[in-house]
Length: 222
Image 1 (cartoon, rainbow, N blue to C red):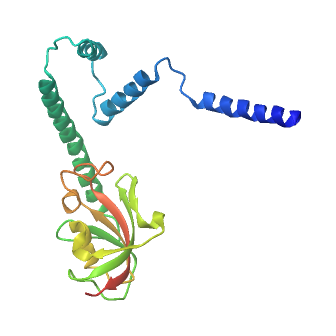
Image 2: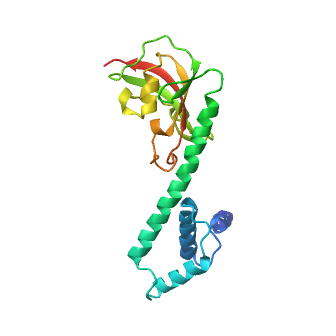
Image 3: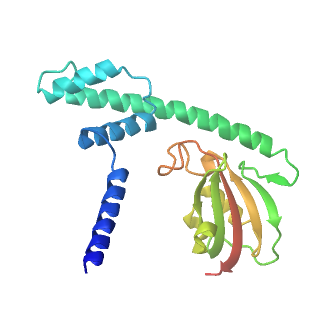
């Protein structure tokens, strides 16, 4: 019994030691967590060159309930303006990067460019029927940004998906109606045939050109 108690105590000490090692060593965890959160907001929105002295001064005045140079409403309006400017600058970079990528890509052997600017490369030729705008399809796909960053993939999930032909972005709608069943294509989609000037979620920014590998498994006639 004594040995069992000693062993149990040793296990508790060991687990406690592991927990202590995993906890952040800071004097004020809440202050540190807020700093991490605010710092991440700054990085995400491109506010990496701000005056820390001005930031700390404004923060101290607000916490002390002292009058600030800007009202809360003015501050929010100014931040919104800067966010819009940052998004516009980031969008301009993404737009040019996409245009340059597609201009180079269209010169590669095997790449076809349609009148809309959509580009595709046939990886595997199918001989089945082509879907129409009225049909549904079952596909496997792997979607990336032009730098190779994966943003969505039924292949990685191991589960194909079915949906109406017209229930997706314009670049997909066009490509699907060109593909015979059984085909696998690599499709390069300009921003205006994808998610446009707004982007989609956290992974697809404004003006982003997209790359998909699409395997058309089945045309579901309606």
